[in-house]
Length: 187
Image 1 (cartoon, rainbow, N blue to C red):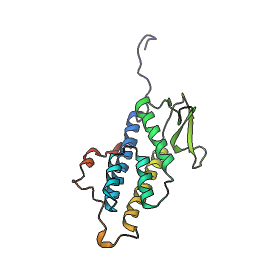
Image 2: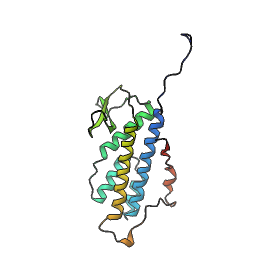
Image 3: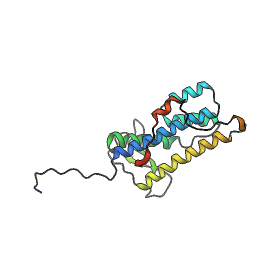
Image 4: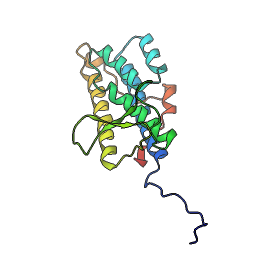
């Protein structure tokens, strides 16, 4: 091949846009699950409307947990996952936006596997973000744990009788469910 011939850039095994989209689908699924769990625990209509119109899943989960009387220890990580998702999808993994307006780094939504701590990894602006299989598995376990906790909370509320419990069935009567066609097979 001559020096003037064009060569395509090396590509990762899974393009960043696909990874970002997979993270977006996980987030959307959690958002819909929050709506469905809220509907099963008989919260007032005003809160249901608030939750269904809220687009930020981290804030939505915090609101539902507060209603249930629970803390929301996952808020920061969900916010970091949202920034990471946007970075992968819109910027190809190039860190261009810090955690705060005056910040110089961005917190990723998964812990550093090299340090083997639960602390979320941070990258300075201008760095390139990457995920490996272990990171993706960790993110999936994180969402799975939250989903399990939400489902358990909907069935174990002390103020509910067995007769008043509803199943989280993703019923067709919820119009917003059609938006959440979750296809996470790529992850």
